[in-house]
Amino acid sequence: MGKAVRLDKFLADAGAGTRSEVKKFIQKGLVQVNGEIVRRPEQKVQPPEDEILLNGSGVEAAPEFVYYLLHKPAGCVSATEDKREKTVMDYIPSDRKGLFPVGRLDKDTEGLLLITDDGALAHELLSPKKHVPKTYYALVEGRVNDEDAAAMRQGVDIGEEKNTLPAELEILSVKEQDGGWQSEIRLTICEGKFHQVKRMMEAVGKKVIYLKRISMGPIVLPSDLKKGECRPLTGEEVELLKSTGGMR
Ligand code: URA
Image (cartoon, rainbow, N blue to C red; front, side):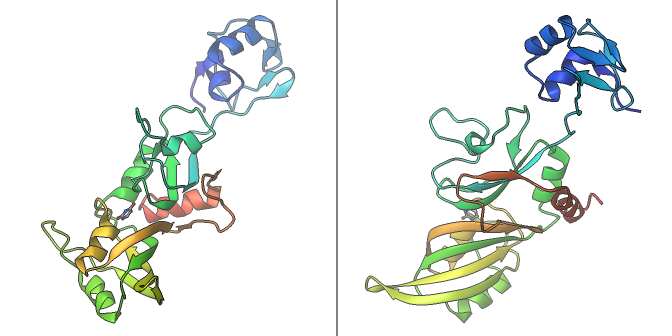
């Protein structure tokens, strides 16, 4: 059995209009419940058992939670609100209350960021105990070498109580550039400390000059999703995330 809710709340949550707009629709007789016109916005309904029509078309209940995959551009902060800065929420085409980013990327970091209102799932994905892997692509000043990769595998000192957990560093290229050296790497970490990738590379004497997250657990940044674009996660992706978080 579905939960009993006020008819006007049900319609507003389903995206049929604002609370005052849907009240007007109801009062005008545009809304039917199980084939009967209902004119009281406060009437309780119990979807999906109750069939609700607006202007003759069925209204689907809002999902319990929503999940977006954002390709975060540089220049915005991973917060729900900020007085001065643009936030990642400015890229989400929803005014649903309670949406927030799952973890943080630095203002200058790009790439995959999940946005949801499912607090339990976010909590699981961010839990230090769950060791959810996150992979980053980075452009780094200096010549990254096999010793650096070995150090990452061992764990490095970034000034925290303990060394970092083992991380996998893959060297993609090492090139001479403008009289110095630049390396492209992929680094997979299973923690989420503040500026972690930048601090880990600093620990081996290298400076990150560009950083992009390319995956989080089973979710990979789609190559056709441009910076600043987002799309809802598919049902399958949500299920994968839930099993990663140990919720399945
Ligand atoms: N590590 C960093 O240093 N910055 C990020 O934004 C994410 C991981």
